[in-house]
Amino acid sequence: MYTNLVLDDRIAEQLAADVSLNSAIQVRCGNSNAFNVTASTLIPLMQMFEMGGVYICASVGAAERIEEFKAIGLTDEDISRIQFVDLVSSGILGGTDVAYTNIHFVDSPIMLESVLLRTLYILRMTTSARNFVFLDSVNALAIYNDDRMLAEYLHTFINTFRQREVLSVILNVPDQTPPLVLANLDLYCTDLIDRGQVLIN
Amino acid sequence: MQSTSNYTRDRCITGIHGLDEILRGGIPHGSTVLAAGTCGSGKTTLAMEFLVRGALAKLPESCAHFTATEPSIKLLENIRQYAFFDMKMVDSGKINVFDMDVLYSWLGLDKASFDLDDVHALIKAIINIVHEIGATRLVIDSVTTLCYKIKSEQLIRDFLFTLGKKLASLGCTTILISEITSASENAHWSSFGVEEAIADGIIVMGDVERMGHLLRFLQVVKMRGTSHSRAKHAIELTPLGVMLTPMLKWGAQHDKTNKVGG
Image (tube, rainbow over the protein chains, first blue to last red):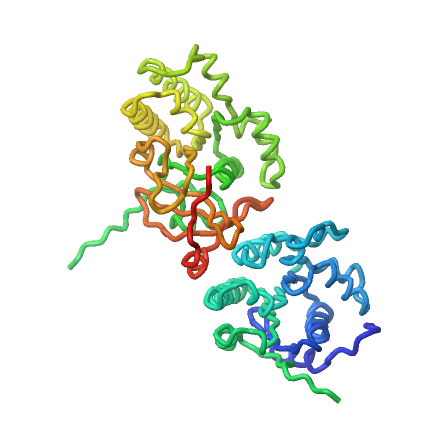
């Protein structure tokens, strides 16, 4: 039971209907609903599909993201099924001094190949039969990386994991993502969960 | 009609994640390969993993490592951090580590420079050891340190050519580690300029600088007896061993330099 957040059930329905292990899902969100969309995607993958996986943190540090997940009711056992690749905390003084053992640090978001290799390494170590790789987020990577390089990277990233039957989930805020990158995501991804337009009641 | 050949040389499967794919199946058996790289580029780790994978193969191979840059005890302490390495492989004699300093003393070669007789004595000693333990994988770390004692370029050439030829005749695939100060396009892949011409293969390792961060790379620039990728690959030294992935093309293009100081 996730106490402090109302999950978007339509995302779970879409995942159940459309997604297979070699899918690559582009998940569009806005600034204000990013965490809700993240949780609404990640939790069904863990609960319904009994998946484990890798969560790549480019927008916030992994420890902060873990605390957020705990705050909405994910247990330590749930969290332990995810390995985090943190691209943020090495750039912050004292950022890597954390209590969690399931966080792997990469020096910088520009070390894109290192992120891929570290993720592949974690997947080689994992005991889970079905795995996802959750990239949070393309727009955060776009702050540091050239558009063409990022587009090339996402092409490699998606194909690498599709080939290995690892589900890719790629989060982005469309209006903060370069058009070239967005166009390429449209091309490479097999599915789209679009929560980019946030309704204000 | 054009004739085609189906002949392929036997391979020494390195077992290193991605490297055998780059080499279309592995290093041609009995080759002498120069692993040339800048400091901290992962040469020693790569070479040690090459030995470990041989020792752990279905048909385990006997392996030898001659260390000239650091004492064997320090080398083993450093390599123990990797999950792929197990001290039992050393204790059981699957991987045999020799200090070059000890070998020099044993041969009476405690001197600043080697002449022709000394070089021949050294070759004979190495070959005897390889033969004695039946080693089919050998690493010399580093050939640069060893060659500093050989003052003549011609003598270095003879040393490497003779050593390579004799090791090949024993069916031993060899990695000679070469220390270089720059892995840029115009660099030599060896300190003395002759090693690269003698070697059957050259694997270059270095760092690409990207916005102030150093990204390790590996590139096979030469490998006789096999087709191979010549692309630059990013590498990561993980507890499971070296892992490779093709380097981003746009990432390489934007790098102003791939030199590192040294």
